[in-house]
Length: 291
Image: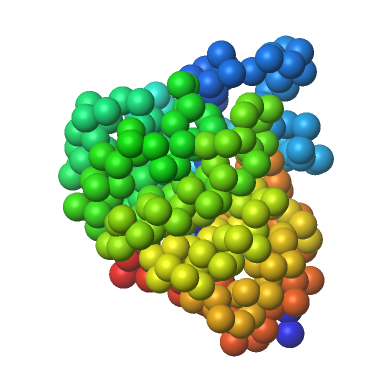
């Protein structure tokens, strides 16, 4: 039947446009960039991968505008990043629309216990629902199974929130080894109480990601940063069969994709009727404990 109209969507990766200067977003891994395009031409280091990045333009109230877009596409809730460098907009959004937004906190495992304390403080003060890490984007790079990650994993278990982690070849032109999907195997084994959500595709190891999700009950997959028509076939097949409780919708608006494109292409996905509510809403609600 295509995309259902009566299921309120939970988007587990969305941004809120702002006038704040976020040009320092990837300063932490700028030393890893070597090619001229990444250093000089790109506004964001994975820009070469996306066509038709939304041009938001000027707006008097970006928060209200974002909520209007959510209403237009039947998005009930969205997970947005809460970062100490630009928390003003996201905190205001949560204050004005408390039922529409929830937070994940991007974390740097190189920060050691200081970073653990920061995350726990944000959890105490703002009720964060997840911690996220971009292993290939840390500097120095920290792999998924590196010892520096273990304090963050333990903190997530203590706070009872998922770890959302980039897996697969990264978009930015930096070394890929830290995000090899096989690295998740030992983490799932060592931290059986840790809910882990893969982000950004897991390609070209998507079939391995499926095998690991079959093996480990605490491992999940989100569809962030993919135009729906480019989602791996292995993931769609898994969602329609034994993985109906494992695959979670995530967009990439406004960082790389428009909601118009996302939802137009979602409508063409060959997802079974009974799987749509799980994919769009129920799995996220359960994994991120939104109830």
